[in-house]
Length: 317
Image (tube, rainbow, N blue to C red; front, side, top):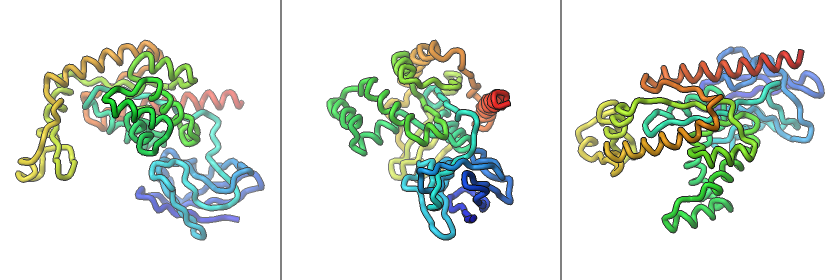
């Protein structure tokens, strides 16, 4: 028995074939080698979970459809995509644990861009505390309700509430199966200590280092188009027309004086957190182009994966 799966996501992905090889496993094959790196390798064996009732391929937010029974992911950020109701739940056979990554960088360090690149190549679940906080409030979860009470009073949300949100997110199946990328968190030693207490220890702590004069230039030159919401930069990404340029606004705290205060706070927080992760910290030169920055990160993550695979292979042998 076999079924052809055709990708309907935005990524240019070739068709693949899933077929039974015996009662306990499946085989994945493809006519193309251009599969995303987070996919199982071509002709790899997939493990069977008899208690489940669906075939699942885990690869970022990709959405697939079966020729006979199409499905789409209920959440565009979901990394578990149901492609066919075949009476099994399959995931790539992997003898090593997925990556657990933390990344830190000052305002305007390019951290958001790098997170997108990492997520796309490695299929990690991207977790940003700020986004998580807003999502929890929007869905009305218990933690979200607690956080909203503080925010409505103009108070900061206490660490223990945010830590619980992060903990719950990292324990979800997609993060456990695919690995996670924790963006800009923890920001203090107390937060790092709390995460460690819950058993979360990253494999690598990526620190983007950008000189202060470049950071100040990046922030002070930022402008917002209030009509479209698009962010411009007077030097690096100027507006397309004079009409747009005339209506651009600047955030009240995107001034040199306030940027330097924010940077000082960031540096103090990072120094405290580094004391917890000093043995696994990889410092990245963020003064270069985004492609060059990612090349450094990619090299570090690839090396880590190769070490893990080698260690797993030696244990198996």
